[in-house]
Length: 451
Image 1 (cartoon, rainbow, N blue to C red):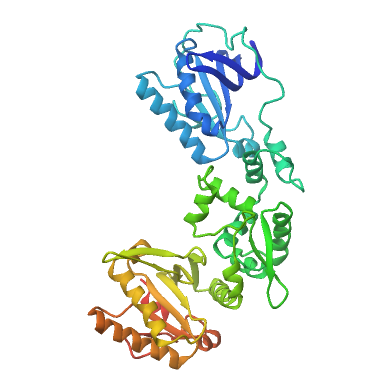
Image 2: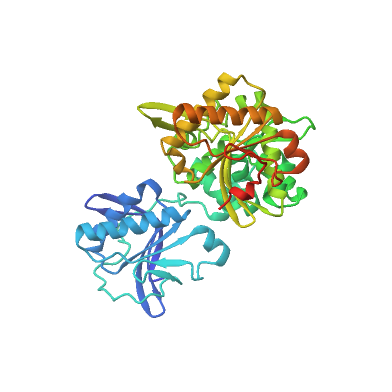
């Protein structure tokens, strides 16, 4: 070190003091480097970059080193540095930016640093930058520094985030620590519980293609870290899981909603309870229906000729649209994309709870007609099909008659609907010729309608 390392160096600029996580001048492979270190300034990043560009006039040899907690944050820094250079008509501030997780896994001297000057990943300080004069010593000797306020190390963040009960630390530090602590399986389980609330561990094992023992151990850790909670139990006494407030905050931060957890929840169609956890009251009232939908999902996931490319279950399935000046909302039980023998079948699923009246059935199907006629189905896929599972064969035939009657009344083509019964589905399987379509009198297979 040519000049002592200064933690939390406070340096005066024309726009106020700049507080850096570290500042030093040192010699590296025969070159003198003046370095400013930032550990993901998050909301302060734009202000920090502005002040650093002011310092470039006094310290033309300055280089910025940034450790970020997410790829979106890395891109944010790169955009800020480029934008500020263009607005000031100034040279680009040389920067090396890396993910904390990559440093932790491969080491700081590995080629995990992205150089904005070279436009590629490299080892730190390996890019040849035109030498600039050293105008002043860095950091300024007259400036002070703060003690014991440097951001925690990655290992410390992991330890703090996974303690039980969690200590009283800032939420963002807890979320960063969890991001490093969670295994790929645990992250996958969180995604599955987010897409399919009230799922049990056996179903999670089938959907994640992991053994039940591994899933059980991972779920125990997620419960211990207060990322999942047990909402209730099914008829066999198995735990039904849902997201805890900390998991919702973690997913929101990962999707870029760092300061809008409630907005993130609304974007997913979730309603949060008073404690911030996912509200599943309506789903629990219709628990048997939820379990039926999950059982179909698991059955499809186990079929050798079926790949579930996408599947979203309630309550994230609400679809709002406007048709002829009126606003409508439909809430299918699930939607997604199935891959059958290499062919794609985009679908919307309706699972009839009981034999509702023909009037209510016609009203629901009329809304689906409006959805297709307004072109809003293209938001999912241009060729999305409506799959309906009902109580019996006679009920399925009645639904077909209602579909044809509505098509005549609205003077349009029949809905692209395929309907079958619970019994046929359970005994013969979803890929058998058990489906009835409005444009065919014979039983058909799902794969016949896949592209």
